[in-house]
Every structure is written in structure tokens, then in C-alpha cells.
Image (cartoon, rainbow, N blue to C red; front, side):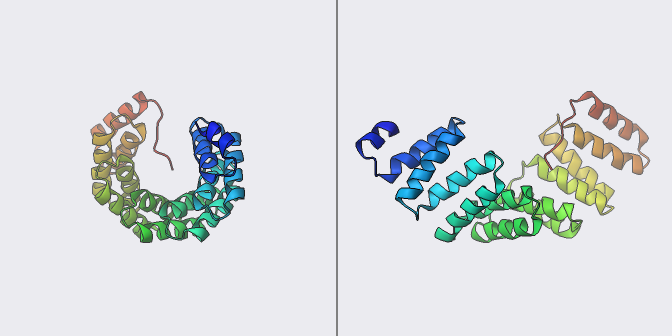
Length: 219
């Protein structure tokens, strides 16, 4: 019991840190932050406490506070790939796409198999119309995680934007095979079929998309 451990040894860092994580898992963010604050007060170089406090702050929408905490965690422990990744997400939510790409790239440099970082970096490149880079990142996600339906979907959109309808259809088909209840994949494939004058296939996909609950991959 962390509370009992704190009562017996109120100046030990570990029980505050572990109770903070427990509070966070129980969706009690204010309690979690209070315990992380105390852990940091007792041990100002505790990178894990800064990192986990950043997660809680980000969950509360305090992006500036989260970025500050992730930055301190990275300063104390530069090789933490997850710190760069989470700070990248916070930068992306905050609208600083250049900083986000830099952090996702740093996470990949530290952990080359970090497929989530490739995916997020690819999504930013896609939003910035840097389609070749987006394609490269989504392809890397698929190489690392062949069942990543959303990566096939996003790569399919990128192929469509590049004018490669056959490749786009192949990727939307792969996404549908992996997650057959996503309306967006059918809808996007129907557009490709329509542009290829495959009207029967386009109509079938459009009807299927309309029959499903409007559900789309996160962008």
C-alpha cells in the first residue's frame, strides 16, 4: 500500500511516484500530479516523474505543461525514445508541426522499430503535402506492423493523391480485409473505382460505406 509506505517513510520518492501512476490509471489526474510534484520535490532529477506528469498534463489538455515536462525528462535522460514521441504528439496537438517531426525523427533514431513514430511523422508529411515522405513513412509502418490497417488506409489516400489509383485500391482493400467495419475505406475505394469507370464496384462500395456507422481512422 503506497499510502502506508508514505506514512512510514514520507521522504522516499518511490511511493509517491508509484501512487501517482496508480492515481493516473484510476483517472484521478489531480491526485497523480500532486504525487508527481512531491516526487520531483524530493528528487529533482527524477526523469520518470517528469515524463509521467507530462502524460497526465497532456491528458488534461495542458500542452505547454506537458511539453515542459517531457523536455525536462529528455534533458535528464536523452535516450528516452518515448519522451520524444510523446512530446512530438504534444507539439502536433499544439500546431507546431516542425517540432513534432523533429521529435518523431529523434524517437526513430533512438528506436528504429518505433512504428507509431513513423505513422505520426507520415501523417504530418501527408498534411503538408509532402507525399513522397508520407508514402515512405507509411510503408515503413506496414513493414514493421503488417496488420496496421490505418497505415494501409493512409497510404492508400497518399497513393490516390499521387494519382496511382491501382495502388490506392490495393491499400484500401488491404485495410478492409484487416478492419472490415471502417466506412472510410469503402468510401475512398469507391472514389477510385468511380474514377476508373468501374461504376458497379464504386456503387457497391458506396452503399457498403453508407450502411456502416460513420467511422474513420484518426487523422
